[in-house]
Length: 74
Image 1 (tube, one colour):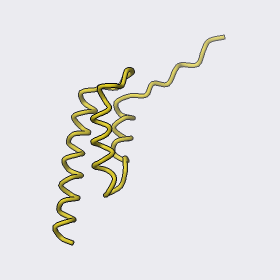
Image 2: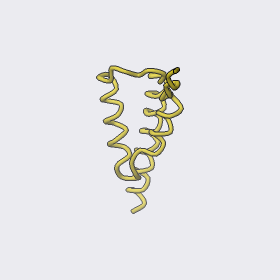
Image 3: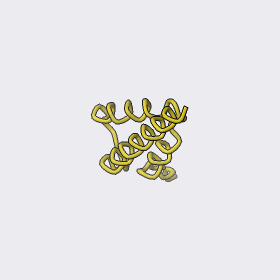
């Protein structure tokens, strides 16, 4: 009997997770915490750490800009 192939959690999955992280108000904090915690993560497996952190940083900047624009318009 052969073992079922192990399903790999990849960069694509991690990016999908980050795209849905939080809401308008919590997203900046959650992304900031994700980026800050990344150095302590021991297992990245099939995840491209550099690509994911670059994406998270870009998403953080965009989320902060949206929040700032929303605050100015209120």
